[in-house]
Image 1: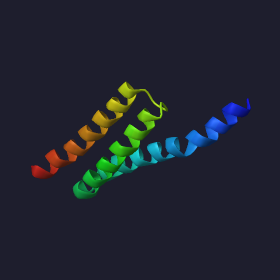
Image 2: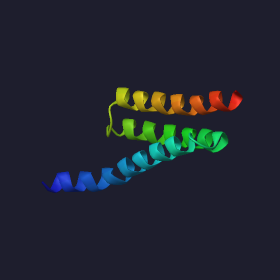
Image 3: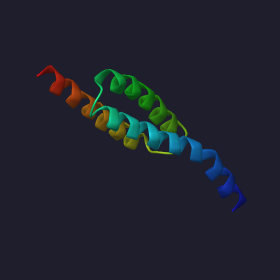
Length: 81
């Protein structure tokens, strides 16, 4: 039980940052293309870190990255029209 508490405390900041970065990209993808691109690269880094630390599965990480890149691509496509 003590190990679980310690590990939870160690993992919590990474998981919180992961969720925050994903939300940031999704919000920016609705409005600002340049800021969304910048936030996307930051989110990729956080997602890869979480996968490296085994907080999320590597396939889950790839799925999250694909979802975010599609969201940003939709903005670029809409702005080009």
